[in-house]
Image 1 (cartoon, rainbow, N blue to C red):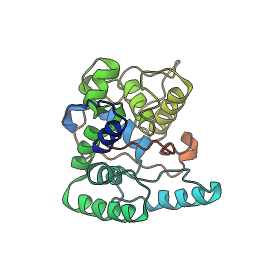
Image 2: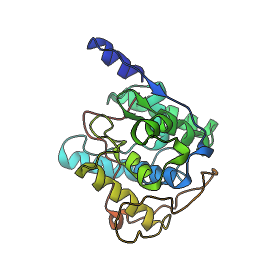
Image 3: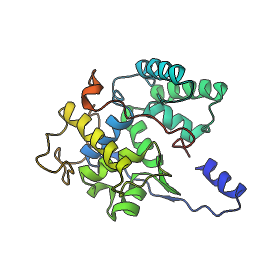
Length: 236
């Protein structure tokens, strides 16, 4: 958020922040699960860093000779967004790992997840799931449908280029991948007919301590969806 404000100031533009805090318990469980499978499928089982994703990311970066794939967990994103910048400086990355370790040690998974949902950037000046829900769908976070949650999850890597309420190829493709991953983990059933799911298959709100079951072969669900588009990392 501070980084975006400084960027706007440097460009001589005003920057208005829209952010409203909402407890994790008020966000529908299926919506939370959609965001977890999109950003950090092993969130409830790793210790802050997903070393398998780190290895896969390094291999892809070396193969393509650029930062082609992101590997940051939800906890790492919280560490970066609250305390650091989006710089790719190695020293910044070491600081991020240290803060990630401390967050995992001092805070429970649900608290980390609640912070994450309330600080994620979802558009110009739009931070947190409550502000995003109202801005794009005209509802409170507690009233989001699964389809809307999957759309929000779809644009997290590129929130300044894509809107969750857009029906363009990027959003629909990534939304489909999120839903496929949820189906692969038996979080939701297979929607009949139109793939655009408009109601919560899982029902209810998020009660906390509800881990998303990891699936080893994500390729069956459409491949990895955690990549951050180069040049526009989700950050504050």
